[in-house]
Length: 411
Length: 113
Image (cartoon, rainbow over all chains, first blue to last red; front, side):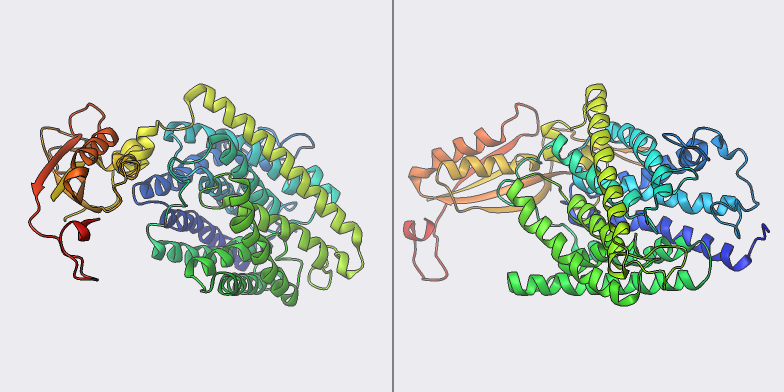
């Protein structure tokens, strides 16, 4: 019956801490890519989300996402963690305290809105950013999370496979990124070329910490210290490695030299793509998923983005949405009951219906998130004004939004 | 030959560069410097403690030109850098004794352009 397993509980707690680290990791990953006058604004946006969503989650976010319900979201039954105690809640995880599951999920709710920052970096007003993030977490993330993972969620009942958050986290944040990039418009003075990342070692540091944290994200999603967690761990590392290699090779062939920025972008794209699949595919499938995600994301960020001309500053759409879509569809291709009997077989294992279900889940996520993000953006824009003044943008957000600067000149 | 040295606001660099290109002044050296004039500048706050009276960040431009380009260069800098507020900066015009292009050894007007 409801027996708490100490190994499972320990692993989920450690995984929660690993996933928490991914948000500061993302701050460095993104922070290194912007110009030095904006680096603190990125770090601040990521860090304040840690504060904002941690509180939102325990007060009502967890309830909206996971309280049992058949409708739009879970409702307020578990608000303030009312009834969410230290006994297991078997429908989510039978061997760990309910609050361990809650806190693990909290870390996902935190990093998802942080991913969007990449699209509107270097030009959003801080006050508007805060309101936008709170509304987005409540009206986009929480309902979608409920549909896919919540008890009674209709995408969950339809049989969509999403092991660790391909739709809920990556496609969701990625398409929201496109919506905000389109709504806010291009940065000033970027027509002559994209600004050079101001600190590439930060990008590498961020990538390393993201990769490390992602083991909690994916292997922790087994919600137990068992074979499934090990499978997720192994395929996660494999896909990231294959994708990093493949991006570097593509650059080598196309641009003449492989770059560390390319390897890092590839590794992150690989981690994104394996996320929905980690608990359902074997290691050879992970190699294929990783090798191909870099091809798709490379095309998205190096060919399609310049062609269409939208300014997704740090490629939140190009990496998370495109990589996420590929991962969700690849789950419908490569999933196998030999890996996870509780999952399903994919197209290549004789079950084309699963691919169709995956496709529907992807399309619904894209449509809902894009439209809602756009509506929330416009509403906050009317209320507070989303974009900073042109002069503030030129001076940089660090000084104009936070009265701080990252680097001194002399001492 | 003159050496034009200008101290401008960092956020005006892009505009000044644009105006200089329009005036066909293409050779320019840029550095980040600290200094202060009359202005108190942007106040920075660290953990709630205000810091004022700091040296302020400025951009220093150095442009060597032939006589006929002196006025156009000055006008371009003013056009690009002027906001009307304290802190817009200054332009200094100095006589330039010699100018030698390292690659060819050419001297004078030839070397400047």
